[in-house]
Structures are given as C-alpha cells and as structure tokens.
View 1 (tube, helix red, strand yellow):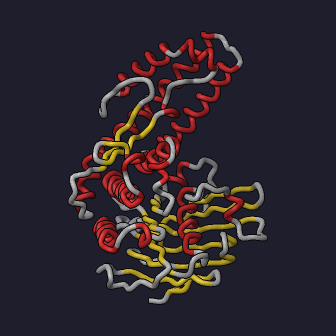
View 2: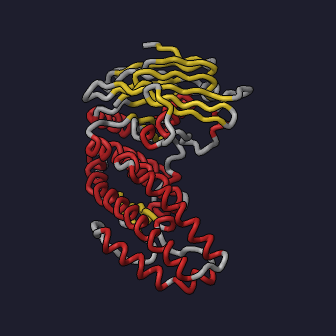
View 3: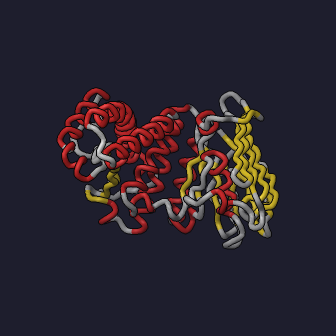
Length: 371
C-alpha cells in the first residue's frame, strides 16, 4: 500500500497543498515550526480520521478558516487498484467519501488504508498509564482485524448501560442481562488482544537482533486481564467463564461502588525490559528503542496478515535514534516494502542510507521537491 497523491485545503498551516510522494522513502526537511509534522499529521488523519497528537479536529483547521479538506489516493501494490479517500468538515458537518461515494458507517473507510506513526511522544505508551497502552495496541489490532473497532465501540456502549444501572440501583436481574451481553463482547476483545500479543513476542526479539542489539536485555510484552488468570492462547469460552467468575466475586463490591470492576476497559499491556517493567528501569534512550521496536513489529505483523505493508511515518527520527540504529530501521522498512515518510531539520542525502527516495523542502506553507 502506498499514498500516490495527497491534497489538502486549510489543514493546519497549509492553505493549499498537492504533492505526489515517492513509493519508497520520502525525506521531508525544513526549519522547526515550518509544518513538517503537520504534513505527517494530515496523512495520518486521512487514514484514521483523528490526529496522532490527540487533539480535536477543530485545531487542525488553518487559523481563520471554518473547515478543512484532505484527500488521498492510495494504491494497492499487489493489484494496482486505486482507492481515493476524502475527509472534510465544516462547522459541525462532517463528510467522508471512498471513491467518490459518501459513507455513513466508518468501518469501510477505516479499513481502506493503514498508517503507522512514530513521533517524539510515542514513548508515552511506556510512561503513561494503562489507557495509553490499550489505545496503542487496540489500534494495531483493529488494523489487522477491523471488527475489533465495532466490538470495542459496542462494548463501551454496553458498559455504559450497565454502569448506569449500577449507579441508579437497578434490579440485579436486569444487571445480569446486561452482564451476559457484556461478557460475550468482552471475551472477543480479550481473545484478540491475547492472540496479537502472542504473535509479537518472537517478532520483537527478532527485530532487536536485526537492529543490532547485542546485549542480554530483551524487550517483552504481555497482556493482563483484570481479575483472573489466563494463558496466551485461551479459547473464548474459557475467557467467558473467567469473566463470569470474576463478575460474581465482585458483585457486592460493584453494588457498593456503583461501577463495573472488571473487563477489558481496565486491562493492561505490560512492557518489560530485561524482565522488569520498562517504565521503571528503561532509560529515555531505551524507551525510544522499545517504542520503535513496537512500531516496526506492528508494521511487520500488518504485512503478514494483510499481505501488504502499511504507510509508516517517522517524525524527527534522527533526534530519537543514533545514526546506526536509524539506518538499520530504514533498511528494515525498505525490505518490508513500506512507503515511509521521515522528517528532519537537516537536508538528507539520498545515498546516505543506501535507500532510494525523494526529498521535499517545507517552508512558508509550501512543500517543494528538491531532489
């Protein structure tokens, strides 16, 4: 998969933009504040309909504008099929189109392309609480199993209804009805999470070796379901039984606290460094390495499952990794066949990483090809 054309109107600092990226590597350089990250954000938004900076859509609109528009043509490398995605909003009105057809449901749109990003705040997945890790891994899972999006949304809706009953002293029989429906959907979510994490374990160690890490310390990831023990490959039925037992054990406490005390909304993904929690023992540099390993592993898993590579965005990678590691990461992405966008404040040389590509200079709200 690759982005063949990007068109923007009133997005961030760009009143108008139309570029055609290279199918391989795209090096984007310019001064700080010139709009390099804004360009990556536009590509990400076009695929995910939200910013990787976790800000509102309104803040992505050019100052003084009332709305914005983004359009991209994605090409499937295997079939050469083109898919055109368009996203626009004006005031409270939002419109999303796929190949010129306006969509009501978002799943067909979101399943049309996949963009993965690494930027200076990505290590927050280690530093922050469980919510950051759930968002990170759920997004990776949804990319390879789109139904995860619908199940996650459905689960949160059921959870809200059950919590409403608990807060308002609802009858236990009615709570039980909602509970069974919640357990069915929770089990599907947990099964996917466990299966995905299981698939990453060997992949992460392989990538560590590929990126030239020779020390004994190893990064690992595991999944902890709140309130009960289970293995990596437990069947859905076994997880349902575990959830029922946990719900029964916590029933009185839930009535007292008036909220649900179990389920995937409370679970965590544990990232370890040399057998200990990465948050507690990994240095800043090691945390950056862990997150670039996770991003690379997610890209490789997407390629394995979907038979095509995602688009990869690397914001200011040079300041996050040393030259040797950076080169090995880029060589890996090149071997994966991933179209990659890399930002920097310094002008790159196309042959410095032994990888072909295209260079763009960003200045004064313009993007100029200079190679």
